[in-house]
Image (cartoon, rainbow, N blue to C red; front, side, top):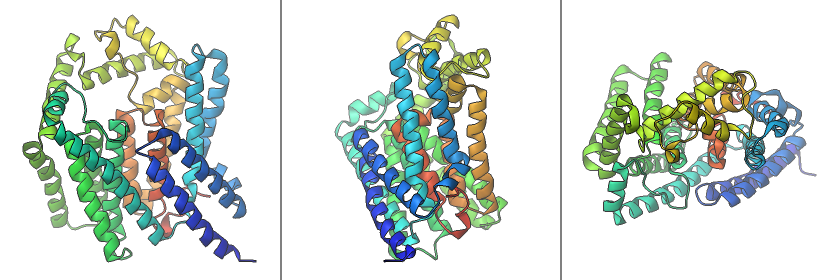
Length: 421
C-alpha cells in the first residue's frame, strides 16, 4: 500500500485538476462555478479526513464565521418578511462555507511549482476574458465611451459583473507582483516572465475596462504595500521612489492615452461634485447614490444595533428607510448598501462586522509578523473592496475572497499556521 506522502502527492494533482475547473468557470458561468466549488469541497473534505485534520478546520475564525452566520440565518426564518430573499441569502451563506472548505488545502497541499502554474492558468483565463472585453470595447467604442460619461460601465465578456471582474483583475495583478517580489529566487525564469507578462496585460486591461472599484482598490493597495516595505525595511528608498513614480505615471499616462479611462475619471469628478452639492443632482451618480445608501444603512443599524433586521429583510428595510428619510433619490436609484460591513451590521447586528474585522485583523497581524507581503496586500485589497462593495453578496465575491486568502497563505513554510488545518 502506498505511504501517506505518495497518496498526498497524487491527491495534489487531483485537487489541481478540480481547481483548474473552478478557474475556468469563475468568469464564465455561475452554475458551473457552484458545481466546481462543490466538487472541490468534497475533495478537500476527503483530504482533511485522510490527514486527520478535519477537527482542526473548526478551530479558526475563517470557517467559524460563515458557520455562525449560517446558523443565525436559519433562525431568521421566523422573522423573515420575504421568504424567497431569505432562502437566496441562506444559500449564499452555505456557499461561503463550501468555498472555505474547498480552498483550505491551498494552504498546505500545493508545491511552489503547482501554485505557480495554477496562478498562471488563472491569469491566462482572466486575461483572455479581459482581452475579449477590450476588443468589444473598441468595436463599440463610441457608444461605450458615451455610456461611461453616464456612470455606466464597459461590458465584460462572459457576463461576470464588472465590479467583481475589476476586483478579480486587481487581485491577480497585486498578487503576482508580490509573489515575484518575495519568491524571485524560487521561481523559474519562465514562471517569472509569465507572471509579469500577464500582470502587464491585465494592468493595461483594467485601465481600459475602467472598473472604478478595482482601480481604486489596486492603487490604494499599492500605497499600503509600499508602506509595508518601508516599515519592514525590505526595499531601499531609491527603488521605492521609482515604484511610487510608476504608480503616479501609469494612471497619469492612461488618462491621456486611454479614452475609456479618461471618460471614467471625468465622470468620477462630476460624480464627486454632484455628491458634494447634494440634492437631486446625486440621481444616476454612482458615488452620490452609494453615500445615500450608506446613510440609510447607518440609520437602520442605529435602530437595530444588536440583532439587525434579519437575513431576509435587508432590502425591505432599506426601501422603508429611504421613504422615512425622504430621500432625494428616485426609486430606481435606491440601491443596497454596497458595503460589506454595513450589510453585515444591518442583517445581523454590529457584532457581525466586528467579527469580520477581527478576521482581517488576525490574519493581518500574522502577515506582518511573518513579513508576508503577498498576504498583506491581498488582505488590504479585499478590505478596501469590502468597503466599496458588498463583496460576499455574490458567488463571485465569495470565491474571490476565499481563494485569494488561501492562495496567498500558501507561499512558503512561514505561512503554514495562518489558516490552520
